[in-house]
Length: 326
Image (cartoon, rainbow, N blue to C red):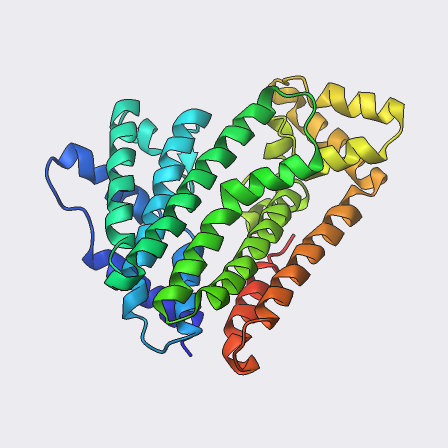
C-alpha cells in the first residue's frame, strides 16, 4: 500500500507533466495559475487511495484523479466570481488577477479538460465512469444553487443544510472515490461502499470546517476566525442554535445574523454570536453530529470485503483530516 505522501508526490508529478502551456495564453494561463495555488489535493489523493484499495497499480487512477482536481478548481473559479471573492488560498482569485470574462471562459475550458481526463479509463468502464461523473457534476451545481438560495431564505432547516453541504462539498469525494475504486478493479457494489465512506467523510469534514471557522485559531486554520458570522451564513451552528435557545436569545441571534456591521463592530458581532453558540450547547451538538458522520463512514468501509489491513490507510486518512486543531 502507498503512503499518503507517496500518492501526493505521484499526483503532483503527474500534474506538473500535464500543465496548460497552450495557446491562446490568455485562456490557459489562469488554469495553471489556480492549480499552482496548491491546496490539500484531498480529492485526487482519495481517488488514488480508492484505486489502491483494490490494486497496487496506481497508473489507471492518475488521469481520473486529475480530472476530479480540474473539476474542483473549475468550480472554485466560478464560485469565486459568484461570491465576488478577492482571495483564494491567500492569493488573488482568477477574476481579480485577470478579469471576470477570462475567469468564466477559463473555467469553462477547465471543465472540458476535466471530462477529457476522467474519460481516460478502460473502454469497458467508460459508460459507468461518465455516468458517475455526470451525476457528481450535476450534484455540485445543485449544491451551489442551494447555497445561493439560503442567502435570501429565512427558513432553512438542518436537513436542508446537510443536503446542501453533501452536494456542494461531499458529492465530489463520493464520485471521485467510486471512480477510483472502479479503475482499481472493484465491483460496483464494492465501489458504492467506498463511495459512501467518502460521502460521509465529506459531510463530517465540512461540519468540522464550520466549527473551526468560528472556534478555531486563525494561525492554525489559515483564515480569519468568524468569517461565516460576518457573512451571515446559515451554518449548522446558527441553525442548531436557533433550535436550542429561548425566544429572547433567538431574536438576538437573528438580529445579529441579519445585519451588516462596519469594521469597528466586527469583533463585537463575532464575540456576541460565539457567546450565544457556547451558552446554547451548539458546540456539543455539532461535535456529536461530526462523530455521527465519521462513524457512518467507518461502517461503510467495514462492509468492503477486503482484509482490514488494506483498509487501514483510508481509516488513517479519515483520522488525519478530522484531527485538525481548533
